[in-house]
Image 1: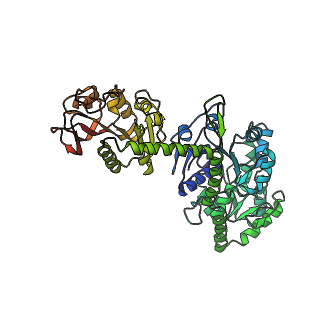
Image 2: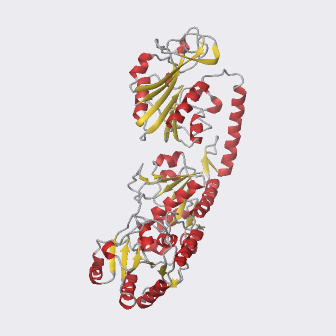
Image 3: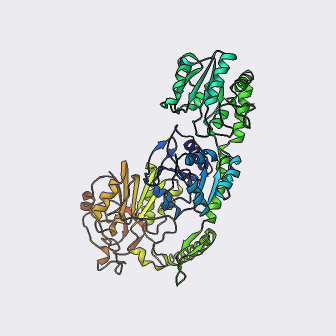
Length: 585
C-alpha cells in the first residue's frame, strides 16, 4: 500500500514530526511505500516543501499523493484537492483539552470546530489517536468512531550510546525536564520541586530544562535559579535529546499519558517521576505539592540501579514497539481504502453514481480481464517486434548505473515502468496520450500496468529531475525531436543519463519510414516514424556514452524487406535499421 503522510517537516523541533517519521519508517519495514508530504499549516497559503531530507525521510511533491498514493493521513493540513480523489484518515496527536484551549483562546482557528464539521460530513474515511484514554473524549467531541493505536518509539533510543556532557552545569545528580510548555500542561511546579529536592535532600543536584521558549520574559525568574540555585542548562528543543536521556538520572514530567518524551525516556532506561495517574512509572506525586514531589524524586533516586534501567527499557519496547503501531495504523488505512466511495460517470439521464471501493475494484477487475483476453488473442497474429533488443539494453544500463529515480517518456501501454518499479526504482511515466492511444478502441487512454501522467515532453510542466530517463521507440513519432531531447536532457540530474531507442541509418534521415513505397507496414498510421541519422544525433547535444546498432530487417530502412529472426547486432558500417543510445547531459 502507498501511504502519504501530511505533516510539518521539523526534525528535532516537533514531537509530532518525530512520531510521523517513526510511523513512516515502521510502515516501510512492513513492506509499504510510505512518504512524507509537507503542505504547511495555513489553508489560505498552501506551500509544498519538496526534497527536504532527514535520514531516510525525503519530502515528496503533492503530485505523489495525487497520482500514486492509495490513502492519505492528515497529521496537519491536507489540500482540498486531495479529498476529491483519495481517502483521507485523521490522526489526532494532541490532547483533547489542549486542542480545545488552542481554539478557545484564539490561537488556532478551527482546530476543534472545523475538524468536527468535516468529520460529521464524512470528509474523513476514519480517525485514530495514539492514546486509548482519549478515545472517549474525541468520540464525544466529534460524534464519530475514533480508533486507537499504541504510540511508537524509535529503536534509536537506547541505554547504550553517546552521552551528553552538561559541562559547567554538570552535577552528581542531573534531573531533566524535556516537555514543551502547553496551555493545558506546563512543568512550572516541577522546577520548584527540584529546587526543594536540592535544598532538603541532595545539594549536589542540577535541573536541566529543554523545550522552553527561552526568550519569553516570563522565564526571567529562572536567571536567579541558574546563578545560585538548582537550574543548569536551559534552552529550546535539542537535536541530541537521546544523549540527554542517557546522561540524566531522572526525568521530571507533568504528563500522565505516554507522550513522546515519556516513551523516549523509557526506551533510554531513564527513571521518571510524574503526576498521579501515570501508569508508566511507580514514582508519582502531585506537582503542585512541590514538597511531596521532591520526596518522590528522592525515593526514585535511592532506587536507581542498572536493573531498574533495563526493566524500564524492556517495558518501553513491549508497550511502544513502532512496528505494532504501524500494523494498527495500516489496518485502519486498509479499511478506509476498501470503504472509500467513488463517484463514477454513467451513461443516460442518471448522471454520476456513487459506488463502493469493492464495487469499483470488481468492475475494474472484469474490465482488465477483458483487456488481457484481447491482448492474448491479438498477440498470436502480430509480428514479433524489436522490444527484446530495446528492453535488454534498458535493463543492462539500469544494472550498470542503478539509478534512484527514473522517468519513462512515451510509455503508451507498455509495462516497462511497472517492471522498473518492481525493482524499487522510483519511477514516473509520461505520455501525451494522443496518436495511437486513440487508435485502440478497447484500450483508449489506459495503461493497465502503471499510472501514466499526461504530459507532452515538448511542452511539459515537470518540476523534478531524474537520474535516468528512458525513451523507447517514441522519439521517431515526435516531429520536433530536437526539442524533445533538449527537454529530456534538462530533466536529468547532474551525471544523469538518457537512454533512447529509435529507427536509424548512419548516413541518411527519413522524415517518415511509413511513406516508403516498399514499407512493410504502417502506411495507414496517423503518426510519423522518422529514421534518424548521425546528423540528427549530433544535433541533439549531450555526449554519446554508448551506441548499439541492430539489423532488424533485410532492407536499407526501417520496415523495409523481410524481418530478421533473430535480429543481428551490427556495426555502424554494416546494414542496420535500429539503434540504442546512451547520452550524458
